[in-house]
Length: 131
Image (tube, rainbow, N blue to C red):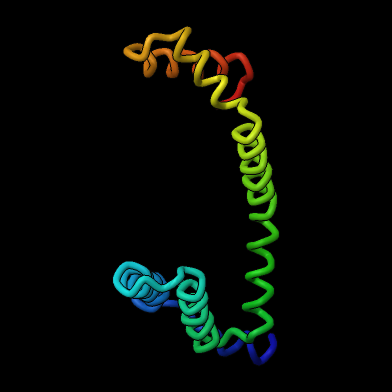
């Protein structure tokens, strides 16, 4: 075992909640009351979490490696969301979505739209085998 692994401690519940509580307070006070941008507030909250990890005995390299690992696992989902956002933007710009809404309202009465949406998505889900 290396020296850095010897001095690592387990987190108590109270200590583990400090980054979450600090993030909530920073966002409520900074964004909600003072109107500051969210990005620097989230960076400050990440600094609090990194400070607690360092205080618990984790070296900076361990913290960075952990962040990189989590981002690598989340990257496929992030890329899918970016692609879907781009697709929706091009559909809105080209008029595809307004055209579908127009014809959807012509074909389905607005009073039955919720029931029709439920059954249509259920049928598509069963046919494609997805949830």
